[in-house]
Image (tube, rainbow, N blue to C red; front, side):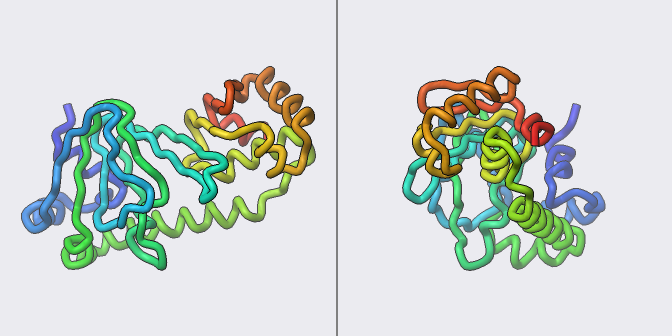
Length: 223
């Protein structure tokens, strides 16, 4: 059975740290452990990112919404998971999405001041953080230069893939068919036919006002 120590070492920013270094970190850095009930809001969109929040046990749902609230994406993120490490620095230091506990959720958070004054003293921590940010930037750049697709079905798949953080697992796209048609420049009837074709292939499930994608990785195979 994994101890709390083992669980913390599995977190992306601590991977590769020597046990002695990690023990020193635990002696210097104040860790805030919290238990959340299912349905609790962990972070709201627009909140200042003044700490790293790691999930240790359970699952957290992220909800990302467009500025005009015309559609939103729900993603389910099992622990261990680091919430928006890219939001701590840069021009916009607020969380983009809202995070809600899908199940009972255990988290640990570290204040930004400890990150800057203590954790960045460790080479492995700095490298892990730079790799996380660099990988995300490279993935986003790749998405921008992806082929737009030859069919409407492929364009819809690409639209979904371009708006999710992790290209695997279950996702829910809350959107009206008219709005999806406006985005891909097609009429409602054509959109409905394409979505039903994707549903027949088992790639998504249609509900009123939302599209459920059981396994986003299958959309990549479709593309």
